Amino acid sequence: MKGVIDSFAPYFVEASPVGVHGGKNNWLFKMMIPRGFAFYKKIGTKSMKITALDITPLDDHHAMAKVHWDSHYLKKDGKQEQIEFDNLYFLQILAEKPRIFAYITGDEQKILKEHGLI
Image (cartoon, rainbow, N blue to C red; front, side, top):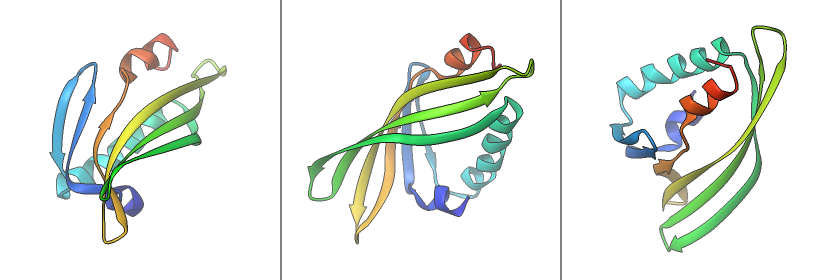
């Protein structure tokens, strides 16, 4: 969990087809991470692995990372499900420490519903 928290800037923004949201990397964020992990466990997530990473430098202190994820699930009916997707992460690099200040995702809830996971 500490690695996740340390990966984010003090303030960050998420954009998806659902909308744009921002948040602080504070006590509330730290409380929400275990809830997120519990949600994924509840829907049968077995693994989420990065299978490709494409980094585009934007300037001396910023970069964009396109991350390809390969996720595997065990559905309640015992069938296995695989979902691959891409997310874009925008990073600020200060003192040689990259931190996510924004990310763009697809409509996760829609995809999970289409695959019968929620």
